[in-house]
Image (cartoon, rainbow, N blue to C red; front, top):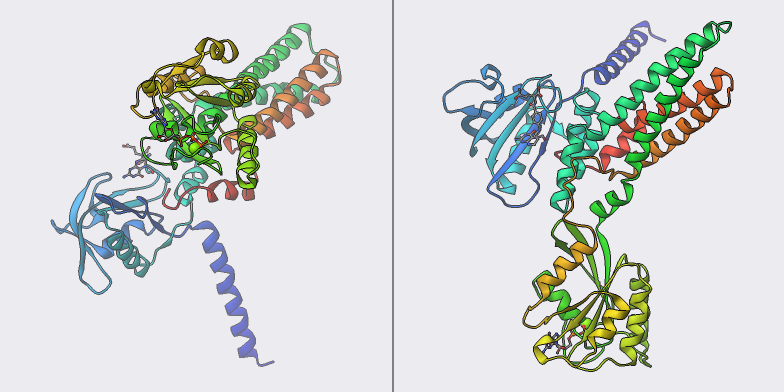
Length: 481
Ligand SMILES: Nc1nc2c(c(=O)[nH]1)N(C=O)[C@@H](CNc1ccc(C(=O)N[C@@H](CCC(=O)O)C(=O)O)cc1)CN2
Ligand SMILES: Nc1nc2c(ncn2[C@@H]2O[C@H](COP(=O)(O)OP(=O)(O)OP(=O)(O)O)[C@@H](O)[C@H]2O)c(=O)[nH]1
Ligand SMILES: [Mg+2]
């Protein structure tokens, strides 16, 4: 082959090689709309990476004439955002934060525009022209994690905070953003690292026995770790309720006002209401916040014996909803005496651990035996879905029954399944290590268990975690976070 051609091929290979190295050591610059796609008062485009400040300097002209590269960190500068064709897109504010003292740890910039999706999209287009690329979901926070600005439990708290549906859930996530979980896990992690260092020393000098004082010391470190991990795990159930809400089934015989109650609770005509018995066929779901508790309400078909095939399937679904619910709300028509269908409803509700009876239509007077309801179901609340009387009291009763309104969580409630699984594994290994220690097993057996526990704890904070798992965690974030 011609030497010249060979040389060119070799040269291209070198470029490719350095191109690869360049990409892997020097991150590119990313941009995204941070404020979502809706029309709003102010919309923010954010950038991160080595070219972030240079890129805004290409498309943003400060009124004062100053360049953003000459502006101090975290100062807002007023000016014009320029489109690709040189036209002014918006009059906006720009700010920069240089790495490492920024959210991502890299150089960052923000454009605070008028909140028009069109302006923001055009601003993004101008930035692509200035050499930046669209950020992937969660990429800013992923960079913050990879640059050591936060651990993985804090990064996950960012997503939890954004998605929180109640004030306590948001408060708990904010606590975790400050390191409530990461700090506790780190404390256990560090204690176990110290312990394993001792054990390594023992293995290196096998002739020296571990004295009793030290053995006791090791045992107390391990049981201290066990306690911390167990306490954290015990919050998982509360965490699930906090994050996912409480499945709540509204059941009752036809026409008692189940759909009317749902509508009165959520404050709009969510479900169809008619005087015809058997109006609701399929189940209807709606979220409702009562105080700090999120209810996932399911309105169901009225329960009765029926030959109508569609209605029968609906009744089956109603029974299914009740058995799958954490809270059953049994509705009765208080203006009529209780009948056989009401007693079937009572039986279904009584089988649920948590239930509330609602005696509806109080505006029509009372003919139902409220004493019977209270004997079977405990609390009975008198309401009128039509006038709204008692509906608020019902919501308060539900909140109280579900343990809402308790102390405000400051991050100590575990809401993340991945973290819970890893902590469960660590707890198991610490328990085994303690057992091995007490049984007088050779030090390396104890050490093996401690190392397994360390690996599991490292997954919580991200100290030791596979890259593909990190990738999967951040993929679930929104774009711009
Ligand atoms: N406009 C805007 N609002 C936002 C964010 C943002 O990036 N931009 N955030 C993110 O998405 C959250 C705030 N998080 C942040 C965390 C750290 C830093 C930061 O620059 N920290 C530096 C400097 C602190 C200082 O000295 O003032 C540091 O800790 O060194 C910025 C935002 C929520 N609100
Ligand atoms: N006077 C009075 N009427 C009510 C009240 N609540 C509901 N109703 C009426 O009772 C009828 C049935 O109400 P729905 O809410 O459809 O009852 P439901 O239990 O969902 O009925 P199905 O879906 O058929 O099982 C409608 O005509 C409502 O307007 C109330 O508090 N007072
Ligand atoms: Mg209905």
